[in-house]
Image 1 (cartoon, rainbow, N blue to C red):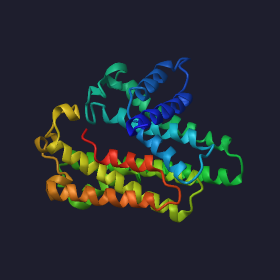
Image 2 (image 1 turned 180 degrees about the horizontal axis):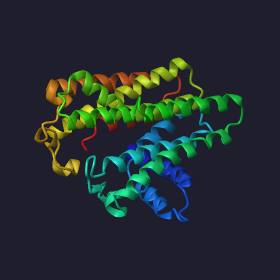
Image 3 (image 1 turned 90 degrees about the vertical axis):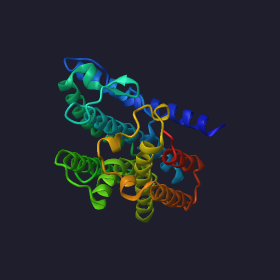
Length: 300
């Protein structure tokens, strides 16, 4: 089976799990439920839950507590996109070729759908306690829930989004320190959450969880730098969106700070270190290693 066929099979596996946890549409609140499910089902590569699953397998076991967390992290990721697309944020009318949630359901309902997805993500994640088969798994679930909440919140993704919005709205000149803070939190935090939760529920030691967090950080930063590179080198056909938007909007990126060649070298350095960390575990997961490389060295 080719790698692309493996990805397709894994994506189907993840989709089935997520579908199981989506709320049924009924009652007086059915409009917001429809908007929630529409947002999740717009599509996507399901990278975060897939990485959570594969790291769990890397640890040598597939925890019965894993599935609710896989659905939860996709709900959190989706809520962030719903809010990003709003007129007050990026004001986007399309995502993955489909109309964005606020265009279909109205701005107020899109805000509520985002709020609902975030809250329902935690309602879903706590179902993992019901699946815990012993005290060890119960404690692992509690630790995983703590990591998920922190990485998605003000000391993670929301913190990064805040710094990004303020820098743009107030015309703050982005220093390298600020830029890396935004990248670490806005982009890398949910990847860190996905991989760390997979490790924790797989029974990883604290040392191993820290190594996975470092690996995920590298992946997130390399992913974002590659995004900046593609804005310069990509084509409209490859990316499916206008190129050169960063330069046009006078946006400071890693590429504008360090140049194209140094940026490419940094991506190479970060990705190699991430792969080496993964190879250091007793149970090799070649699919996960290939997935990381595909994420980083994508052309779109």
